[in-house]
Length: 310
Length: 278
Image 1 (cartoon, chains in turn purple, green):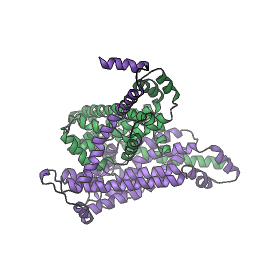
Image 2 (cartoon, rainbow over the protein chains, first blue to last red):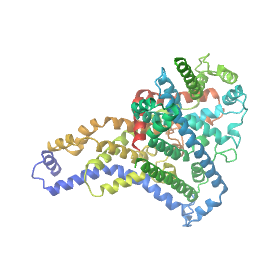
Image 3 (cartoon, chains in turn yellow, purple):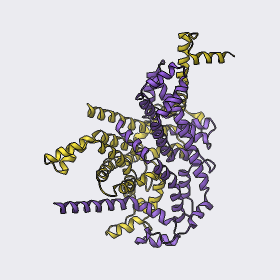
Image 4 (tube, chains in turn purple, blue):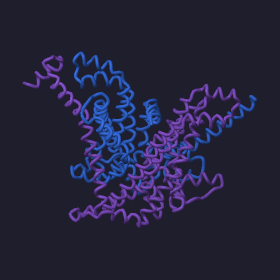
């Protein structure tokens, strides 16, 4: 019954426990606390990450794993010549380059609008936030109906103002822009809420002082509001950027990457080459490249925010 | 001067209302259409009637239940996401507490590894993770949906930040009274840390509720298929009926809506504080 006596000893914190024993017990407790998380992170995050890197240097094909050979940089060289990959990279870049600034500015504008003391302003806050409450799969399905060129709401509404009809998702030049519009519609409310919290942190007396000095609304925006939320602005831009590089659900549900690969993205290619074509080696190379892009963005974020706070 | 202000206010309201219409019309159309027949939905597309709930038929809803195991999808999602949340709260907060309060060899190194892991995007480890799960024979099981997502580096980080800001005195006096570390954690630290537990629970729930890519590849049939993937399959399953899909989408929106209505305050605080801290 040794464990029992040991336990009572500790509970009473008796001097019979030597400092050494105590130290060891503390060590066991610490490792007991961090152990489960560390083991899980190792098996389901670190290990797969290392494997992805390793596979990217092999010709691992899912159906013939016994033939796997080390091929060096072969997969990465193949990427440079793969027109589909380059197209997916370009599509992803297009999405990022438009969504990040537009969504951030839309969210900021919405936040400024709903930050005013007006009757019923709470309703408008909830209205702009409502699309966030639905999931991306759900809005993607919904908007596929809305974008239907023959039986869709979008063309009916645009027709009222004398525009269209558009082909939206079925046209290779419009599909990505249609996805971009929907994505901003879905996500802007989320950033709006973060901006709103930031705006409410700015002390009122700054605005009052500016009013006394005769500043107009625009000057207040440029000299008080924007500097006051600068860190949040950078944070949102970066978070949106990382999320945007992961674009997958919208093209998967709405267009299956088409038409003519015009909405195929990096992550879509990771999925397709890995699970459809079973080319684990090549898929891993794309995954690693994708990881590097996210890494670079994250490093840029640290730089930016450090500079700002200094 | 006063007249100008009134005009400005009216202008502001006009902008707000137009924007509200833009943000709400798809959702209103979804809900309203779910109660209409197929011919009504198509006939109304060209007029304002698309947004008017003039009929109230539940046929689309019964149609959904006949065609797909909707309730099963819903329960699967609720179950696996809840288990991730509960086990995750436990595992991550324990680890965070050790990082915040205990002295042990390799602590700082281990913690910087955890922080570095936050950067790894899930999409880049998808395929090796699939192979590992296959090695465990977990494909198409709840284990595959749950176990890889219990430990979460970012949540450990969030918990640790919170624990570091707690006053140490209570824990120290409890230790003087001979309470074990585990007991101190459960009886003193957790009650003081309710806000961070609620925030992390909420963010975890919402994140995994929206999971798509992983369940898409890790599940192969309806027995463990979650809602999001079920919706995608239903959407592409012929015959595609607008009314049926709208009814399914409307029902699929309800759980998250409930979460937001009840936890709105915490959610907004959560995303806001996540924004501020960074």
